[in-house]
Length: 302
Length: 275
Image 1: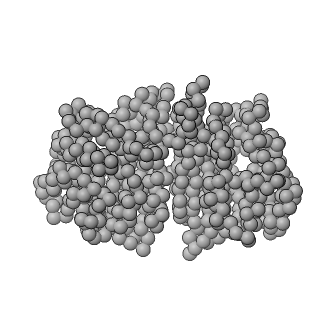
Image 2 (image 1 turned 180 degrees about the vertical axis):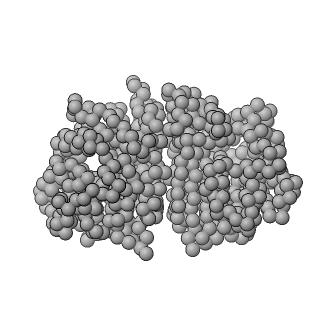
Image 3 (image 1 turned 30 degrees about the vertical axis):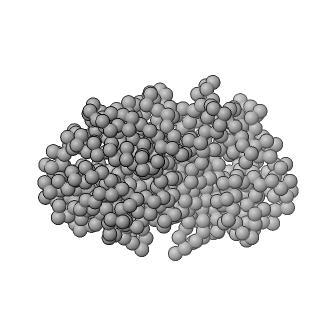
């Protein structure tokens, strides 16, 4: 992993086309993720103690769909890795991993955690904005590039994101992502009804961020904040798929699921696999709406 | 049970062919005088791949208006539909506009098509309100793949799965989910007189059984059969749907009231069977 670290900070140059993230958005999001990292380290949602004791932090979907790609020695790049729990879970499954995140607090916690669970020989963490990844990763290629859960909503420009994914995937390598469904991004709760309606637009102005005050935490229902703001960019399915195709990747699967890895509203219900569901109002789980999806795409070998 | 569903759907479609031939929406007279029935989206996205002599198979072609529009653009076309009434109309229309030398029509439901039709095609084309009549898209994907030549193109233009979920009483202020995106088990049953092309038409066979399909359910079977996805496009407009929350805009296209730019009503995709 030393070659990655060696290419680290100080080498960064402004990427072609300028920084797509406005300065005030980056500052607000860094502050948000610093706070969230602090809370997440002790949150029920992330269950770091359980992870230290051997629990897998990846969801059953990821274990099923990503797991078979991971063997001893598989190199994996986890983009927007937060504090590295899932990155380290991939390391436990045998991979040599690099996690990249823009939050210094998250990267510090990830490195400490890697040390504590004895995985630091196979896990490196890079503090970098996503769009600056090239200046830290150099021309390093990976067998697998991995993105999951609430990552791309922090990115305004998916074409540049997909180009970074493709650039760090070896020929014949695989990209895998599991994310929140674009349709579900537009859902909001109907007050008092334990039901959703379509409250937010599906198509977006690519350059205009959604600016939302944040008073809660998705991984700790008790946490409250009073001065945090999130700058996000929603993306429709065509934009996501076409960005990957445009970067030269071949879409290998598209799957959709009616459940989430974390609760969005207090009234969602958790199952024995730690998936969160919308209730159907009749004592069962609602299976009729797309909440999350996964995509596997390959970089052609030639 | 599937046979009962198909029987009801067939009776419904057989009866609606005559209504549609007379309807303003299909505008058969306009077509006869030279108008293409294809939408701008299809013309822009598939048109450049259709040349003189291109062989094109149109699945679920109804009475062949779009099939014949591709023939007019130069293609040698085959249209297939499960309705005998539709196929009879399509053949008559081909004769009338002088395209029968380049247009063949076959009566068959999609999944049985390989039993009655031979050959492979440069383009397999299907559009607008086709998928809801199919219970299972796995055999459909077999048919698409079977009929494509190596290097051939599959093109689909359809109503967006998101709009199929909207409740009829959705308003600009409150878009509500009334129908599933994922369907489990039994089909949706509707009992509605008239048609999207003529809501006031007096009809007798009004029961239909329909199956909704999300993006993954539509695309994944084709990916698993080795087709390469070239693009997926989504649009905030469509045509030919009759939902109360839609309105017709100055350009003649339908959009969601109060959501002209931000709710998806249709999509298109192109895939390639690699050589």
